[in-house]
Length: 325
Image (cartoon, rainbow, N blue to C red):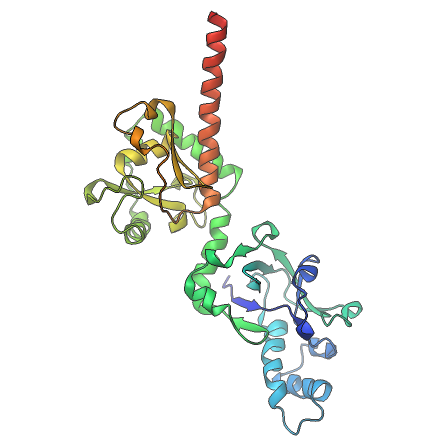
């Protein structure tokens, strides 16, 4: 299914209605007095005539109703089930997915100018993303006049973010734990697998990190590897998105996969397991702050698995010590 992407402002009659409309799992476009626009038999000329007669009857031509035609036609006719809409709001942006093919009319909302609506599914658990999580070009695109904007040029970025969010799950956490077990039992596992389909993923990470391990700073290409935060075996959309990856030196990649090294998502500081922290080869990494474009939600899954595994180990040691005493 081809999914279109648009941005809509929810400021009918120049009043901020974003949160109250989204609370109903809907979006609205304004021009509520023109409820007859929902007749799917109308063409764009009909839209222009209706909007002109209702909102600009004193004007000698259709100039003022022209922009309204663009936005209402897009809202009623161009949006289809599965399409994605971004809703800018202050320094954040909400993501929703169109849930049905047809617009609806809620006459009870006529006075609020939000009667013309679409049912939606709220993405990212209904929470907005900060504008600073988007590319600078997309941020600029979301600063627009009027009620809507076609975001076709940013389709891959937007759908990639949505796909990536699907990796933040219990299944992904289980995959991290399973991967750690395999690496711990056979250290060659992380270093010998070949995945031809990962060539693009690897090149993206090399470009993003400038051929440098984001933890150690190593620039020797022969030992740099594309590491997945959520393991490749989990599969699914977004698994090879660059925000599910980091460029790591091969031995650090091994430690990361074995849950012996992790990144604290809130501070981006390295945390080491006790056995690694005691090693003169790695202890200097503990607490080092790194720069990475890996998604914080995915890093949090890895970090939580790391803590759970080593907390259990520490509790077991304490129990054994008490038994011996």
